[in-house]
Length: 180
Image (tube, rainbow, N blue to C red):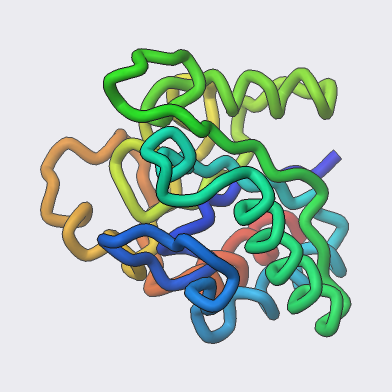
């Protein structure tokens, strides 16, 4: 099985320092949805691992998070794409949970759900915590320069072997070339 793990905010859609709190604020980054559809067409199962502390902060509720994801699914469906599963952490940093990135709980759950070892599975993120969570379970780290990516690129502590691309569309072109 070919699997990929994507962060949501800053990778698939534009991020906001004020959080994405409703479906109207969820705006896809140009080319990201087409890139996901291309992954699907090339046999990839696409998963999302996203920190959503806005839930525990009371900025939005589960119904709103589901509505945001419904908008994402519909937009993808119009392009012939799909996301196989979304894993999210609703906790704030101070909750000290195992699922909030940079902890690897969501990634471990993805491995269990799909019944695969995550060694070498591409994980695409725009922040160091996205990459660290993936590397901790053996994923191949890919940083995109969208979202917080340019800021993250200034960090000299990127995991060894991190690949860097302009955006998800460019990263997907590389990933597909690598598997052919």
